[in-house]
Length: 321
Image (cartoon, rainbow, N blue to C red; front, top):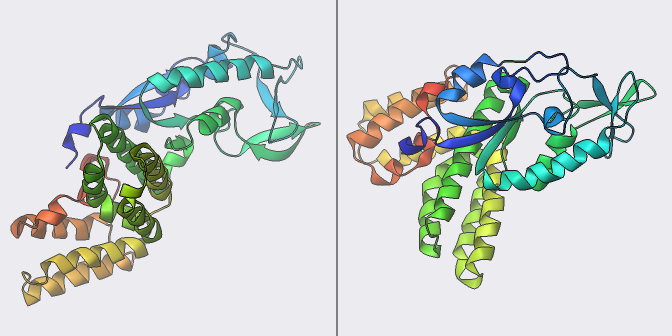
């Protein structure tokens, strides 16, 4: 459905510069990630950012870490004990404002970095790790762009986390394109209808809440309606799709063919869905069979569902068991 978004450069992701192979780390090295560059790079335009270089620090430079309160840590050089917090925070404040104009649809951060780590960054107190926090730039990004899909490169090795992140990125792009195309209540109903099964796979509860919001749309100013919808949409998609919820969606889709499938076809489809439910085959297997029936029987409603093709099949995001 969204093949126009599957072309290279149609979607912009912010990314820690070192992950692209740029020599910006404290020791003058890099952390080139071949999956990001070689695979994701076929579909996304990357906007590289190194907060430490961006705030004026040299290459190479003295290592630094976070100290003090994990909710409000200080950025300190380890050997010379120079406090770089104010310098980094000034950069963060300016940079997040600048990025408002970059049309970002996601951000991939470098794990463990005191500036760019998103999760479980070490915070020290008298040389002892007391709590885990976020890098100063990553925290500023999360605060300024609360709905922007964000992830760390290390976590992208987990198939479920990788699928969830990339799926959210494409959802956010579709939503931004919808906003840019002159939204109306009627067009919001169409947008919501096309996302139905995709949202249900992440959270049936959120889907029904969003449906209720759209149903009451005439009682709200359009700008307020769109703001609430965006918040529910992106927060709902951040919840993970599960085997149980996907199975429910697959069975729901099967109901659209009850007047068309032969007895043998019904048995086959139920068997494939059951094998997926029992973790014997990946989600792509029952979806491929259902997609075959969608076109065989010209099922117009299902043709309009992004659940069937939320991201490029070449990324093989639904191929894991």
